[in-house]
Image (tube, rainbow, N blue to C red):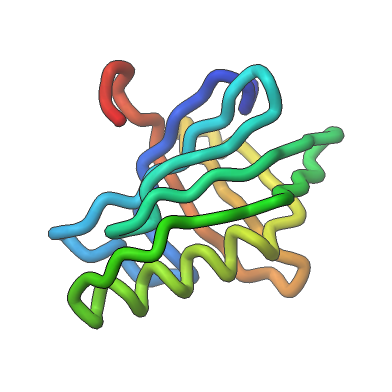
Length: 115
């Protein structure tokens, strides 16, 4: 499996399931860009992988207000995303992103054609 050209639906952020009414996605382009939905706002930045190491950089997000529980989830997701240092693919196809302190996010492949 390869990150380039892949799209993911985030299922868990640090062991907590993503709120049902929200959409948290990550898309990695072949050109080294990363983007997606953080719960209610869109984000984008750059990515670079070397082996299982992953660095996300120049992250920026829109700043629309949304219900407080979603804002809390979004802020947590964006903070963790900026701290990601490693990734791995699980045997079941899930993507696990991990920060230097061991905090993890898991995602499943997103069906193509969805944003």
